[in-house]
Every structure is written in structure tokens, then in C-alpha cells.
Image (cartoon, rainbow, N blue to C red; front, side):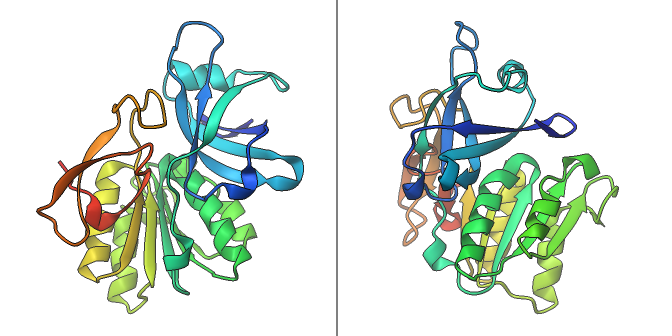
Length: 254
């Protein structure tokens, strides 16, 4: 179902243990029965409906794989692996978390927002995109009873600029979150992490990466990391297994 220009939602019924799924985890979807594309595509879990044993993904058509996915008819069987990876740490949020989403970084954060609201924790949400048509799930966030601030690069909706401008403005104005959670483009994540760490805030970032397997075997999604205790203690983490959610202090940006 198309929910915005070039953006689609797909609801999938399956046999996953959805009760154990964490907000921030993802699935690997086989988009074709043929040989091309041969690799599965990773998608963050957008919503979970335990009563109907189903979940949803939300994605943007950017290539052949997502184009094929968008053209699938209702009722078609889809080969899916998941839920995979490490999700957000809901026990670390405090009572005033801030969720910062850019573009198709919305899905895992919307799922996380629902989990927070169920625990009577009300986050503030910032959503950004290039233009108004890239702002996803604004009404859905509001239906959860959440305040949503928006930013667009072209000024077609909300603040003209970046989500990090709003984040900095809030903090400068005395609205200090107890924690920060973010998903979106790499440069945005880097800046969100910098702002949060400057205030010594708990900050978790959900990274996007090209993946071949989704469960740590191929080593195709490795990033450079360090330990929280020592930035000089370098290592490597797999986005699909040690992530996709990392403590901002663990990531060495290159």
C-alpha cells in the first residue's frame, strides 16, 4: 500500500515469535522468487500486531528490490527471516526520551514509540525529510498522543533545515531529554550523537547498512567501534548482530 510518494507499507502475516521481538529489530525479506535480486533486503519492523500474528514494514522504493516488493499482490507468500539484530534499550529511556527520525528511519522509531506509550512513557518526536512528502507517519505518531516536530530541507513543512537544528534548539531552551534515540541518514546520526554526548545523555543510534545474510556470517555490514569505557579500544561490530542499534559512544565514524 502506497502511503506517500514512493513510500509503501506492507503487512506480513507469519509464524515469528512476535512477543519476543524488540523495537528496533529488523527482518530480511526475499523480494523475488527468481535469481535477481539474489540478496534479501533488510527492513526495520514498523508495527507489530500480536493478535493477528502480523507485522508491518515501511519502505521507500529506491532500486529494483524495493520496486519488486512494491508490486507484489496481496496474499502472495513472502520469504522472511527475523526478527533479527539488537533493538533499543527501553529500560534506559527515563521519563522524557527524544526520538529523532530522518526519512525512512521512521519505522523502528515508530515501533519504539508504541512500546514506550504502552509503558506510559511519553517521548517527544522529531521527524525530518527533504520535503513534506518525505515526512512519514506524522499522523500515526499524533494518534499515539505524541507531540511531533518536523523539519524539511526545502521548508515545505515545519522547520526549514534539519532535525538536529530542532534538537539543539530544544536543548538550548531548557528542554533536556533523559535519553535520545535516532534512526536515519549517517550524517544525521553522527550529529545527533555529538549533540547528545555533549550533554552526557544516553543515546542509541540505529544504523543502516548493506547486508547479505542478516545474521553475522558474511561480515558485509561491519563498522568500526570502540568500547564505551575506552575510545582507544578499537574493534569492529556487525550492524546485523551487534546492531543495528548501537550506543552512540561505541561508534567510530569514518
